[in-house]
Image (cartoon, rainbow, N blue to C red):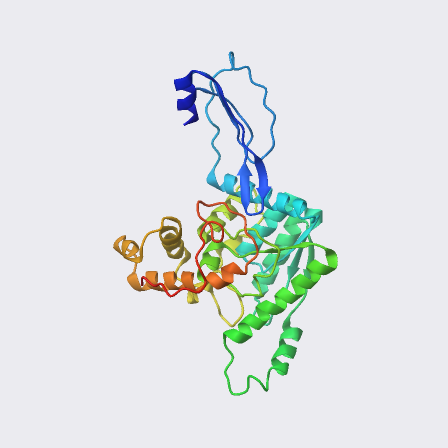
Length: 348
């Protein structure tokens, strides 16, 4: 568009873009300069401040610099977190390290944005936490050079169950006990955030947020949701990109089946479709605005689609109470996709 305008008017165009984080928005810079023939002659840095000196009469034409999608998303998240923390008055951040890929990716982003000396990782194991997950969390913290604490939640969980024993009498253990564990973790992390004045980062991804695979007042506690707009399959792509030269995120965190580890032998795929299927449905329904019938016609299982769409709509109340999240896709939840909580509309 700019090249066409410059060529038609035979007049140079200087296109100056803002750069930096503004709550959910991340403004990417990359200002452009075109000569009167519609040729690009200068381009500012992406996701960073820049200063350009351009001779509009003599500057040679150049090609636009292209970055891999993974690098663009990662750099945008780093910039968004850095500016959010600084503009809100935070010098440090903390987050729970589960040994999984989501918290690992969030930790790498935090260290890149704020420096390893300003990031604290906390492992909060329960009786269901695997040795492998604890090892992966420790190895990641050592790899990043961040302060690392281990605070078991089992004593608090047993006390909570004892306190609720008479109230829960006659009822089997279920999701209520699972969520108590997640909320105990939230209490500890929020307590540390208050005590040390650190910004608590939540680590849920877009795929989980979309279908409500998260615990209100539990793992959703925090001041900023860093990868809230990053689908799970992009989480894998980003993690592999981070490890392109050396292993920073433990390989096991990337390859093992994702799990909340709130009950024995639990994995995400016990409750959700495979993430590649889930992300494809989310892209069609949330981003592209396709109807259920249109998605079914594209070849997906009808029952799976209707279940996912129902989960998306039922989870709006959770998303409304979530921490603000950085926007990196064309349509994010919240400011990018506003729907009422109390509605009875159904198309499935």
